[in-house]
Length: 124
Image 1 (cartoon, rainbow, N blue to C red):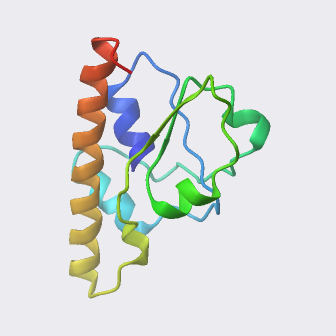
Image 2 (image 1 turned 60 degrees about the horizontal axis):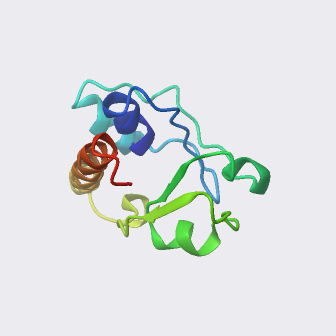
């Protein structure tokens, strides 16, 4: 979800998404993003590699697992952590799961909009 939202709002940046434990895209993530008109059905989770992560200017981790298991990031790379709950770890009915993914999507969207403002002001 973060990659799809970032690509929509940060068009002038090279956006890539990866995970510490790549998994198939969750159907609820696809549905939550479809609600915003963003198709992530062809996206896939990629593995973070040590040599790749340090090629970026900014690395954003979204949940505790990612922050704790992220490869060592060089000091010249800005590391931002957004402590966001992983909706895939939530349990409930289909409607509750979709609502949880939508809630997390909205949190990520707000953070990306704030990041966009900071980047435009060169505050990152």
